[in-house]
Image 1 (cartoon, rainbow, N blue to C red):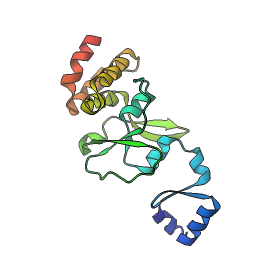
Image 2 (cartoon, rainbow, N blue to C red):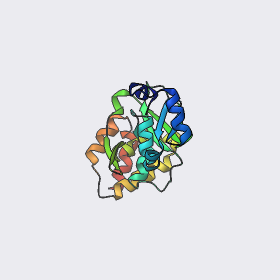
Image 3 (cartoon, one colour):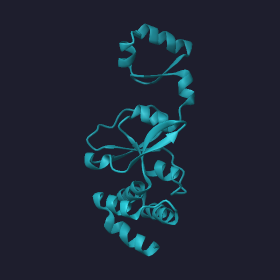
Length: 182
């Protein structure tokens, strides 16, 4: 919960401090609080979605969920708008930011279900394209690994992959590898 929400429900700062002292509420970061019982039930993806509601789980985290990489991510990868100011974050969970234009931010979103709750995450095709888009930062070897695993899988949509690749301007990098893997 945010401080604003607590004020709307007539919870004063004194009441909040008392709840924190009793261990009922935990201060996540400045202006953000959570019930201690609900905090234990939340997954890291749910946490990130609560902290960054406009962010989309992406790159390494999405590739790991879809089993497109052998890399175990050290942080949750989140893509936000390049117009957005990077938010201040708590120490946990570790979050790694990627940036996208407003026009491309909402492209390829699917809902990932975690403990019955929905978290926005990029689909397989967008994830593959992002690895090539950020290959200077990530490395070409990881981008190729993700593409090979995508091509070996049963759930692939090459028309959607190339549609996203054109919009993200990575088609010239992806196309030769896809043709070789067919």
